[in-house]
Amino acid sequence: MIAEPITNRAVGQYKEFEGYISSESVLKIDSIMRDLRSASRNPDKEKETKEVLAVANKGNLGKKLKKRVDLFVEMKDGTEYYFELKTAKPNINEFTGIKKQMLDWIAMRGSEKPKANIKTIVAIPYNPYEPKPYERWTLQGLFDLSQEVLVGPEFWNFLGGKNTYEDLLKVFEQAGFELYDEIDKKMKNLNHG
Image (tube, rainbow, N blue to C red):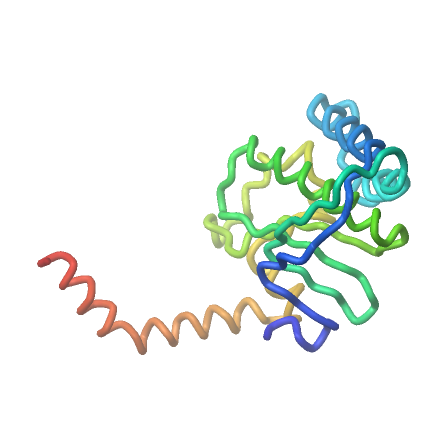
């Protein structure tokens, strides 16, 4: 696995994520989202995380929730990363929902472990604009771009270390060469079938 050398554990399609979203967390998250959408506050991941964790056990806890996380990674230092993997070009409404979901995750984890060192990140595994930088305008105003968004090489190199992205590209290229005849034959059969 790519992240193995730097992690205690990594789980794709993490389905065992459980916790509560307290009534005070709901109010705090709604307030953060409203302020971000109206541009009356700037995105600040560290501040938002502290605000949500501070109320994660306050008010009515309600019922325990279970959520699916695309990728969960616990680093050797105990930092927990919760990744939402997205296609290259989600629209602004999708990103609004993702931002709220990530704040919900912080509340859920904080309800179980109030001092959790939690990081929630949107990961876009490839940059469709390559070699140009990823167009992040749809993320501005909602996300702390330096703290909660990783695109293409940033994501893969974060998980696996320097040059992981380049190594993956070489693997895909080699696999393409090795499978070219088989893929070509299947495509021709589809076109003639």
